[in-house]
Length: 265
Image (cartoon, rainbow, N blue to C red; front, side, top):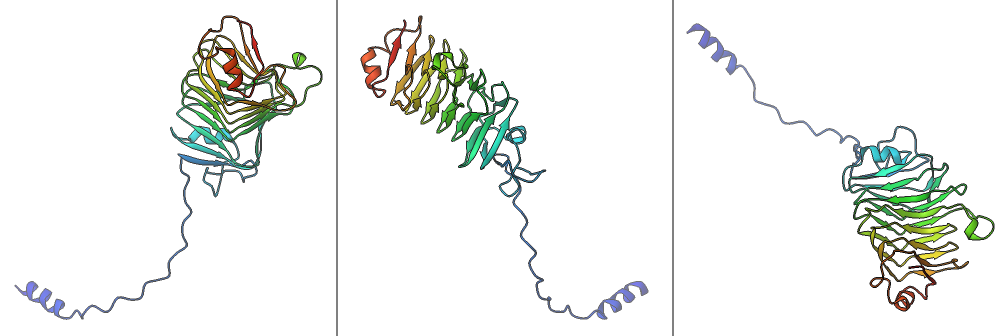
């Protein structure tokens, strides 16, 4: 009983709560962390970047190691030397910004698209003519769009050039879209292997031996040919299907800016 009275008396001795003091100054805004669905790369960036726009990675490989499925890797201005292959999977898009150049510096295929991947707006070239393609395509639903792909000048007739190519399809490469690209100074803009399919449209190709169709089924539409002209614009090799989409040849020519067709079927 005496303890209860003591607690009651101590409570009575507490004064009223004072007014709330003023709010302190707001601290600095924190930086935005990296988004694994939208990463950035810049060759001139400082080391140990995190892939954010403020702290980009230095290499495409760093971004490929952490990008999430359906993510985009933005390649900012700069030159990116390539000596080993980049394998794209998980629905990844690599998107080039103005002033970015991918330069192959070894005899390896720099890009392998394994299905549901996109190369968009990249400039791809090499320091010397290597006997490889810049892009190899496998699987389904890949896209090569808005790119500029070219090799170094090679002397002599194009039939003697090193066999460098813009892209090559594997036999299981289906539903491939190649659109709005520029190909030049290459042995072939593209080599289409048996069983590969779909659309090649609105590309500009010059100073090559054109597209080689080897038992593949592709619709060619709206393609055009610059100067110096190609030795052949489209070659249809023996064994390639007759009928749609290649016949009549006159329509194939007309639908592709009066293309020069080498029909070897």
